[in-house]
Structure formats: structure tokens, C-alpha cells
Amino acid sequence: MKYRKLGKSGLKVSELSFGSWVTFNKQVDSGLAERMFGTCFDAGVNFFDNAEGYEAGESEIVMGKALSALNRPRDSYCVSSKVFFGSNKKPSPTQIGLSKKHVTEACHQALKRLQVDYLDLYFCHRADPDTPIGETVWAMHNLITQGKILYWGTSEWTAEEITEAYEFAEKNHLSPPTMEQPQYNLLDRKRFEIEYKPIFEKYGMGTTTWSPLASGALTGKYLEGIPEGSRASLEGYEWLKNSMVESERGQERMTKVAALAPIAEEMGVKLSNLAIAWCLLNENVSTVILGASKVEQLEENLKSLEVLPLINQEVINKLSSI
Ligand code: NDP
Image 1 (tube, helix red, strand yellow):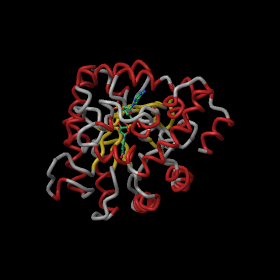
Image 2 (cartoon, protein in one colour):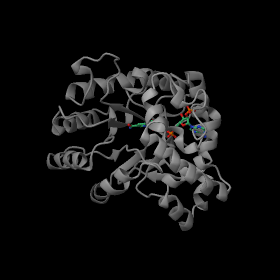
Image 3 (cartoon, rainbow, N blue to C red):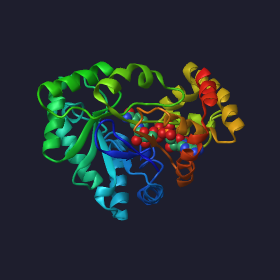
């Protein structure tokens, strides 16, 4: 495993990290999570991603149980949470968004559920048009000075919103956002590569990128239909099945996946490994967050690092043309 600096901060994160969206509590219990973290630690993974909104807080509870059972030194790995969507299935207005109240209380709740004294990374899961950006920056800055979080960041904010937060922080001598958590994969490139270019150059933002396999689409396993037990077959994720496979957009994406598959085949590698490794070619990626519902998937995906040196300019051009 290699490690990259989280943007211009001093924190070094593993090139591949591991997240829990959809999987923890729904497909993965704390026993399986413990095995998965064991696999991660053995491979040198040092960052684990979570959010208050994943399975209404239950994902953090599963992660907390598994990590505390493993009892690894707390200073050897990083844990995140995110605030915005709330952890209550029927939230009151104070239990969602980025107000000072919810940002603060969601942090306290995440600390309890994850069984940690501080969060290494704490993200605003989306921008909140109802809260002035300055109020959120102050809330994050206060949590940093209290030692409850170390770095704060954004997820899927526009470059303009990130700029506003950064400049408010600088002007008021507060901690600016260190990282953004955007989607980035072979099918979803535009925001990362074009919109964010100025914020990488100007502010040195780090990134913890999500869905390297576009929720599994880039394994190619949906080309023949929807496999039983796969993410698109899960109850409550019908919207994902629609956008991944069934809608016009989904169909277009599947056509692209079908065209990408022979490139991997020619190289003698799995499309999933090529897709994950490809993300790491971009130097603005600090860490690619993997997702997996089985230990075997995680083991396989970690092998993507071996595919990275095989990706030459010709392969890059072929992938980009699709
Ligand atoms: P991926 O796009 O890699 O999708 C992971 C899923 O694909 C797995 O759970 C599994 O689903 C399937 N899969 C993975 N590997 C294989 C394999 N080798 N063979 C077959 N199927 C495979 O990542 P995620 O979408 O899970 O995103 C990763 C992390 O990013 C999340 O856990 C979360 O931490 C973060 N994230 C952040 C978001 C944000 O808004 N900030 C949004 C989304 C994710 P299955 O077996 O069920 O089919």
C-alpha cells in the first residue's frame, strides 16, 4: 500500500480506503465487518468512511463494534463521519442540515456510535441552502478547537460553495475545509476533472473519492441482468436499480460498461480492478474509498494496486474514448 497526502494537509491516507454505505447493517454485520477490517489492516488500509445517514446511524454502530473488537491502536487509522441527512428516520428540523446545532450534535452522536474520542475526518455530506456557510464553518472550527474532529471537509458541494467556505474561513482566521468527498469513476468524471480543477490548484483540497465501481456497475455484473443479492436488487434501493440499470441513463451507462469490458479483457485483468486502479491515475485523488458486501470482493478490489502499473497511455486513451 502506498500513502498519499490528504491535499496540502500533513495527513497521509492509504491509496485505497474502505467505506460502509449500503453494506454495513444491511449486508454486513459486526462480525463480518471485523473480518473485513482485518483484511484492510493487513493490506495497509488506514481510512474507514461512515456517515450519520448510513442506515440511520446503525452503520456507525456496526463499525464502532468491529473496530473496538479489533482493538488496533487508535493513532494507526482514521475514521470519518458525515453530517447533513440525519440519523433519525423521521427527523425533526433540528436533526438534519448544517446548522451549528445539528453539526455539533451529530458529531457527538457519531463519537458515541463509533466508540471513538475524536473523528479524524468530518464531512458536510451535502451543502445546506438553509444555513449560512459561515455558520457551518464556525461550527466545524469549534469542533476542531475542542479536539472532537481533526479535519473537516465537504461532500458533493459545488466548487463555488467550497470557495465560499474556504474564503470565509481564511478571512476570519478559522480552519478551512481540507478535503472534498466526490464521486469519481470511469462513468462519472466531469465534476472532479473540470469543475474542481480550480479548487485543487488554488486551495490544495484533498479528496476521498466514492463509488469507484459506480455501485458495482463497473464490475460488469449487471450486463446480463440484476444478480440476486446485488446492490441493485436490495429492498429500499429501487431508485438505484432504476438509475444504474433500468432508466435511459442506466442503459447508456450499461452500453459504456459493455464497451469498457474488452479493454480489461485484452489486458488480462478484471474490469473492476482496472476501474479502481484508473481512479488512482489522477493525482488529485488522495484515496479511493472501496465498498464491498463480501470479504472476497474486498480482497479482489485491493488487488487493483497490481493493475495500476499496467495502465499505459494507450489504455487511458481507449478508456477515455468510451
Ligand atoms: P463501489 O462503487 O465500489 O460499489 C461497491 C459495491 O459494488 C459493493 O458493495 C458490492 O455490492 C459491489 N462490488 C464491489 N466489488 C465487487 C466485486 N469485486 N465483484 C462484484 N461486486 C462488487 O463503492 P460504493 O458505492 O460502495 O462507495 C464506496 C464508499 O464511498 C461508500 O461505502 C461510502 O463510504 C462512500 N460513499 C460516499 C458518498 C457520499 O455522498 N459522500 C456516496 C456513496 C458512497 P453488491 O455485492 O451488493 O452488489
